[in-house]
Image (cartoon, rainbow, N blue to C red):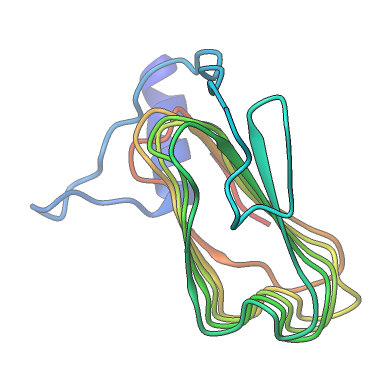
Amino acid sequence: MRGLALVAMLAACGSSGDDGGPIPDSGPCVADLTPPGGACPAMCTSCDSGVCRIECGAAACNDRTISCPDGFACELVCTGVDACDTTTVQCPAAYPCTVACTAYDACGDMVLRCGSGTCGITCNGPTESCGGAAVDCGTGGACAATCSGTTGPAVDCRGACSCASC
């Protein structure tokens, strides 16, 4: 029964290995590591309990690569038109990472590259907040896209311990 559930999950995610075969999940999800945090890096709008929050208004983070700072979990909030459009987000290697997209085309064509921590994108703009976006799930962490009335991103589940798309 477990094997059937695994096959169904992998088929839904569409993952494949270098040989074209499916990549197995990483097993059961485990609790995320607690980031050590420290002095709040300049790239963060604010920091709280080891979480770097980066806020991007209209076109503020457009066409950029955002690499979350070492030692922090990352929370990116894209609140305006083209706020994070065509942006690449490199999540922390071992800590949680989330992106919230709340406006038209706020995260259009974004690429979210997850690490091994929990990773997700929420597309809750009025329309097309994440059109053309892609989520590259990391190995080991839970990975999800959540959408509210919009087109969701493509989700590559890879070896995530759990995976959900819109």
